[in-house]
Image (cartoon, rainbow, N blue to C red; front, side, top):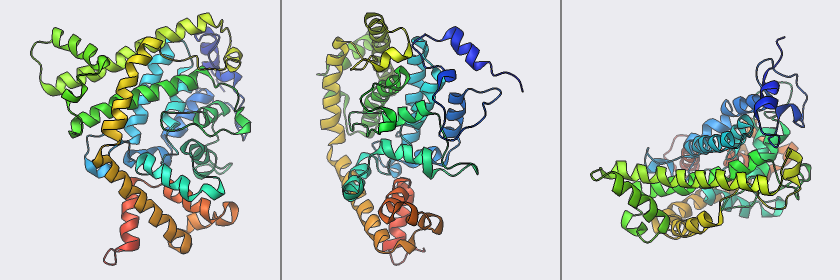
Length: 383
């Protein structure tokens, strides 16, 4: 079998503080190394080919799937996070394959209907461990995906699994397990994905909000970060159509934040004297971060999105309906589990009825959940 050249490439070209695939803690179920792909490349490929990844196409980011074809879904969001994260990882000489795998997997545990689905499942499951989409993502890759006869799940490497569990965002803090050293900072690659996620959803949710008409450009005129980019675009292009100008502004906002993040992180790596991957674990705060100046610029934009988009009455209506759908589905399956497919029911003795119902609903797309709701509660709908 030809020798895998990826390990040699990583040692030659990656920074000493990057996570090398040859230093991986390995997989839960031992496997022989592939001839041409590193362990993180194989992880990325397994994620892309998984059913859970494909289902992200019809899972809500902000706008429910049937609201329109243009809006981001969990799938397009994950791809956008991956693109931004790879750019940052490349600039910092980090492991792009590990970064990409974590980015593509970071939302695998999300429910239908976005964070409203997560909130209601957490309420329904609170007495038996609750629900957290990071931990659910780990369940997906460790247990729920069925693709290999030798083991359950996707059997991903330890570092990708850690990246899923320790992923955090403005909406949640990651649940943490002892296996992943809860008091220890994760790899720089995981930290890059966290920040790429923030950049992606802030700016692309803003884009979708403008496209939907829930946000007007005039609403943004008081935001310094918007003014900064808008002024540059107006000076460079005297005559430009609305859609093109909006795209250029969103692109400018992303570029400003990515550029600042890279420069500040490089300074922090130097200041903290990080020489190897193990040095990152000893630091008590994030290394990959924005400068204080850009943090202050971002704050008003993030508050604006929370107040004017995520709390917009139409988004709240969608969220409220979604919670009602999921709550009623959960209750109905709990009362009559025989209404679930037989391959779902067979897991009940192993993990318990509530967790099986939770797994089943969490894995649904928006439209599958709506179809199930109609089949269960509409007497004229074919089952």
